[in-house]
Image (cartoon, rainbow, N blue to C red; front, top):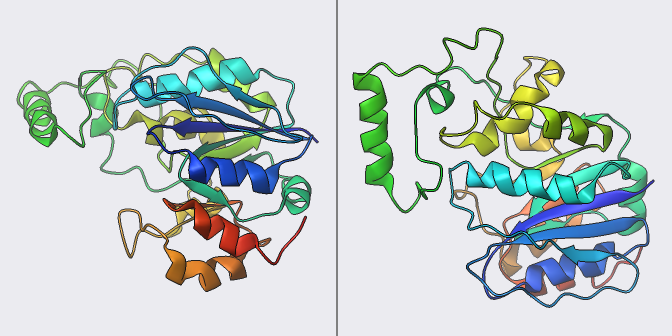
Length: 270
């Protein structure tokens, strides 16, 4: 089976991504990378995988519709020829060798779902499309107050639309990317944090309603929100990460030091 790994990244250092490519370097695993336009394109190499830096680049603003735009463009470039597509960030590391990775995926979707109750406001209200809400928290609060005061509810005229929520990162069969691309995205425009509702709402039929504490595990991701927001793994976590290799987690997040990946895999081979 053929796999396309879509990457959203930024910054001047792509060392973690390069190590991820090194681990998963395989003729059946290709990489498609959107690198934020505010940063120079990284130089990445592989022996077997195709590595493509997409040409249309945007400035991705945290919590805004630009995150959905970047995902959508990656899927457009990837097309429909892959058996599975995966979305990761440039600060994710693989927790599977290439051989195990290719054997592991059999389900239709690996998408995390969490209880959406209390989060409908994200799509009900009106928010600017290109504001980084992490850097402009006051702007976010003002828009929330505005929406409450004027009782803005963009969902009331979309009675057939059901909000579903979960983590941004996913793995799905390639055929579902066409469904994501062909869906009406108007409800996600001018919303806040739509990256956590976009895939889940369109593929809501896979939401069983049986929510667990770790919705990232449903997406085959190892992300620790108890020790950080999320926790950044360091060299002291190498024994922990080694124990998780070739289990039920495809990727771990976050990692900022590429040497961690080297040390996790230095005694392993495909």
